[in-house]
Image 1: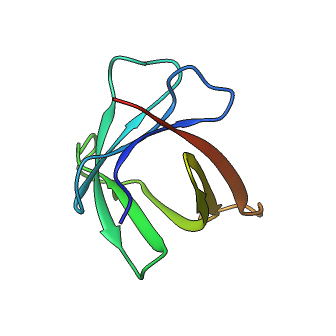
Image 2 (image 1 turned 135 degrees about the vertical axis):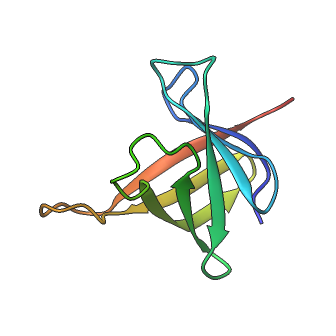
Length: 101
């Protein structure tokens, strides 16, 4: 299980903060002081999904993202973001650096 605060490489603040096995915060680069709280669900030992917890529109489903751990080496984490959108696109690897508290 992942824990701690991971910032996207070459970013000031964007990244994940894994709070516990059920909750992760996502911080967007344009809103460093306003992270989104996401439901975290592990699909297997290396794959997890996130789901928005704030319901903005009652007629739309929540946003869901799927990630697979590619590697964890020291403070370096690589996740593969699995494309689940409408149009054709490819999965991408995201590089993170763990932040000390």
